[in-house]
Image 1: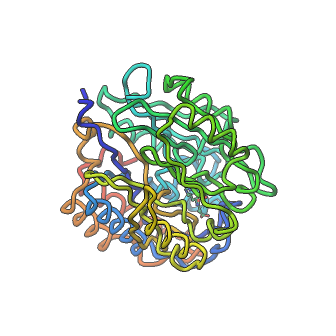
Image 2 (image 1 turned 90 degrees about the vertical axis):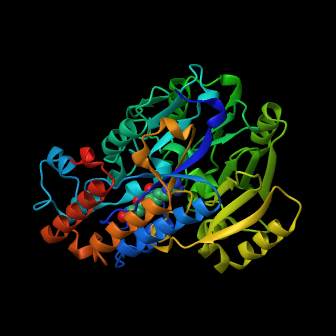
Length: 420
Ligand code: SUG
């Protein structure tokens, strides 16, 4: 079982799969739609992800991985009465998506300190709003059941349809060190022409299943304006860590009531709110300022791991310079290059799932150090396609190459049992 004093935050990054491509499948995700039809570079993409993990290790953080899913997803196509060889363009694009890389959408996680039974709970996300993501959960669940098989964890299946659940991307946890936390579930109602992907009933179901204390659980509505401006997940406009909430002024429908409720249950909270006149919503979304990993070094001190694109937007660059020069809780920034993922609307925070637990309770095959990352990088360099043009998504030779690449990675990590 786990030891409470050994609990740390582990970031499990989704390794970017060999089928990474730009099919433009995500309505409401401006980057993905804007880059539809572009040639992708799966090898570079995956190596960028590995480099990001090295940055986290260099900060003294504990790092884990989640694996790419089998693509094309032949089981899903079979359920639709077709095959990778015969599926039409749209179905094969949906079956080839490497979207499982965005591990923030894999599950919602409530650490042991927050749950009634003292176990860490994980609910796999059903992702049912987008067809290319709705078939992710069985392969995610299979991995979670292996990685978190220890009795310290409770792994749950998806919330049933029609309640859309997008996992940790719409969930924030704040806590003073070592205490029970406040869990905030952010749901959407409407977003102009774009869908609200996280349904309130799904959030409430996850909270109940995790046995959370209702007095320490908050449900906030995402502002329609944020969804309409391209914040298809809350983690595009807000991020939390420890006692810090870093959010855009227009992130939530009723910010005053929301922050009052939060201060009432967590008086130590430090809310760093970015005013719209300083950083307009459009700039925040374009730069992915809030899709940063907000992390705490083991020795203390908040670090914001930002995408390098945040330096290209004037208002954001000015804001970040002032932020680190000021007296606030965020004093340090690290930039990472995840441009291939960013072009599909996935920044540093999308690529990771946070699990607060004793690392000794996690299957060690899902944890990495520098040497294991070297081995993963070697497999990627040898096997990942250099480029994929969208017209090739139905090509049987590409399918074979992608399947072989994934198998090579599973074999290297001694995880061939996930083969299917
Ligand atoms: O669901 N993009 C993902 C990006 C997910 C980002 N995750 C978080 N914000 N946590 C999405 O929209 C694009 C794939 C395509 O269009 O082919 C995509 O699925």
